[in-house]
Length: 113
Image (cartoon, rainbow, N blue to C red; front, side, top):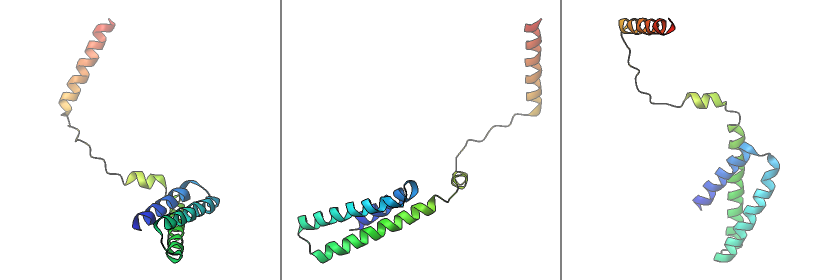
């Protein structure tokens, strides 16, 4: 029973993030048909099927609301919290940089003349 609940919450979050409210009606209808068919196949009682439908539709709606709220989270805050491991950049001594720049400018002038 836990796996369909988690799947229902995730499905609701995806629907809430990307699709409008009217999608909940067909999604609830599909869940109702699936639960009734499964209950008939495994010969569960009608009360258990009704309870399962109520729990799954409620978890779908909770997921939908959480998906709606996730659309208000700015994307920049999600990107700024990402930790990226980078290798340290070696620092060259200033003398080496100046010497390399002088050699480059001298070779440029030699090619130009």
